[in-house]
Length: 255
Length: 255
DNA sequence: CAGTGGTCTAGACCACTAG
DNA sequence: TAGTGGTCTAGACCACTGA
Image (cartoon, rainbow over all chains, first blue to last red; front, side, top):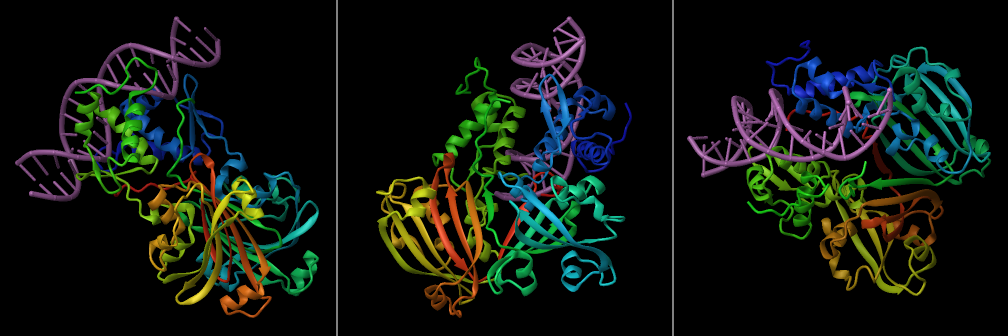
C-alpha cells in the first residue's frame, strides 16, 4: 500500500524491490533463518504485480541471499561460516573441513601505522592506523604457518584481541569480521610464491633455515569491492585449491 | 505450431524448452556466437507464452550458455578459452589476460604406461596408456615453468603433438581438449607446495640449484566429475588466484 | 482447509539497435 | 521504422505444507 518505489526513474521496479529487501537483510531486520514476507504481502507493500516481486526474489535467491521452500516461505539463507566462505577458501575453513585439528596462537596484536605494502594494497593513507595481528597456526598440533594480518582501524573500530579465539570458528578472521562488524568478504586475491624461510619463521615453525616455504599474500574485498584486510603468511603445508567452472552445472528438477 | 513438449507430465514447460535448446547447442545446431531464434519464434515453435520462453532462456543465461543483447538477439555464448575457463584459471589464460607474452616449447611428447601418481589421481589402471607431454613455458621470453601433463589415451585417442602450438590459445591444453574432443573441464583441483628446484629444472629455468620454487599439481575433471588430466609443474613466478563468493554480487543496470 | 511458492497465460509499453 | 529483448500487469491453476 505504501510507495517506497520511484516509478518515474529508469530503474526497474524489481531491482528496487530486491535492493530494499537486501538492505533489510543486511541491516538485520531479517536475520539468517528468518522468513521474510510472502509474495502476496510484498505485492501489497510495494504495490507491484506478483511477477515483479518474483523477479526480485529470484535475483536474491540466485545471489545466495534467500532460499525458498514451496508451501513454507522465503527464508534468509543461513549464514554458517562454512557456507559464507563457500569458495572463498579461508584457511580456517579449508583445514576444518578436513578431519584435522586447527589451533591458532596469537603472537602479537597491536595498533600501528600502516606499513608500506598495506597502504598500497588496502588503498589507505600512510597516516592511517591499522590493527596488526601475528598468529602461529597449528594443524594436528604441528606448527604449519605464521601469518600477519592487517585491518584498518577506521573500518573496524574497537577491534579487540579477545574477539579471536585459539580454536573453533572464532579463529577465522572472516567469521570475526562478520560477527562483530557485519562485514561480508566478497572476493579475495591471493598471490603465492616460494621463498626460503626466514630465520625467525624457521624457529617458530621448527624448520632448518633456508628451507623452501610458501609465501601467500591475500587482499580481501568487502562490499563495493573495497579492500578491507591484508594478510601475509608463510606455509609449510600444501595449499589445496578447487576451481569450478559455472558453465557445466547439472540441474536437477527436485527441490 | 509444433508440439515437441509433453504437456501431461509433471515436468515444467520452461524446463523442457531449456533442455531442448541446450541439446541443440550441444549437438552443434547452434554454435558459439550464433544467434538462436527470437522469443517470438520460440513461442510459436513450442506454443507457449512469452514468459515461459523467457524463463527457459533465463536459466540458460544463468548457466552461462547464452548471452542476450537487447535489440540484437540471443547468442550462444562464445567459447573463447578465456570464457570457458572463466574461473578455472588455466595458466595460459592467466598470463594471456595480462599484457605479457606466453610461449610454450614442447620438450617431450610420448605415450607411456601411466606412472604411479597418475594412475592414482586419474583413477585408471596401471596398464593404461597415457600421453605424457613435457613443456617449458616462457613469459616475456623468460623461462618460468616446466610442466608435465598426462592424459589417458583412452579418453583422447589420436592425440597428436601437432594439436599444440607454441603460441596463442592452442598452447592451452584446455583449448585443445575442447576443440578436438569436445571435452569441457568443469573442475580442477590444485595442490601447491614449495620445493627446492631440481638440478634439471634449474638448468632449464636458468636458476641456481636448490632455489625455492612452487610445485603445483592439478587434476582436471570433466563431465560427471571424471578426472581426465593430471599435470605437475614447477613455477618461478607468483601464482595469482582470485576467489569470489557468489553471495554478494553487485548487479549493474547497464548492459 | 487456507496459504505458500511454482508454473503459465495473454496481454502491454518501453529502450535500444539496425537497416 | 520494424524488430529485439527488458519490464510490468492481472489474472489463473497447481502441488505441497501445516494447522
